[in-house]
Length: 212
Image (tube, rainbow, N blue to C red; front, top):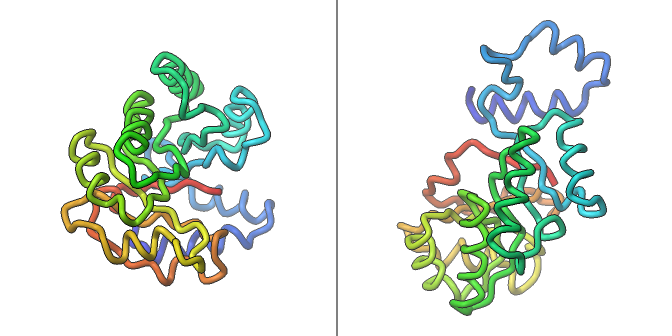
């Protein structure tokens, strides 16, 4: 399925009443294997469920029929131990939910601070970190991406501010070899993702998305 077709289909689904949506699903059944998303890894950012404890958040994700999650530190602190991280990852997996990323994680221009985030993601078994790094930290991020083999998705929080990480970091300072891409939260700006400057990245081609 082409990206344009996917976006058009998502817009149509969002505007359909529940009864029409159910009828459409019956007329156009899921692809082979029962995948209604046809390969798109649609999931939930657990920030959306930040007022719920972990167990209730897992139940809520299962209730809406999604199988992927981006973990926010409300449900697993960045200061947690390796054992706690593995235990929370196991809870999600036992419920049929695969952790795909964590964040949004703020990152200072400090190697120890950035390493802590990468170790957190490594212990959970995540392929990607959604982050808001300081623009000057790109040299450290380059090194950490290569060391840990974990991708970065730079978040577009506060795009109108002077320190917007997506504008200043992704637009000007990303090494062409860094696995970093834009992570667009359409709720963070009325202009949506139109101003994003795309970079070549394995994470950009992974076909995954989380809803906030």
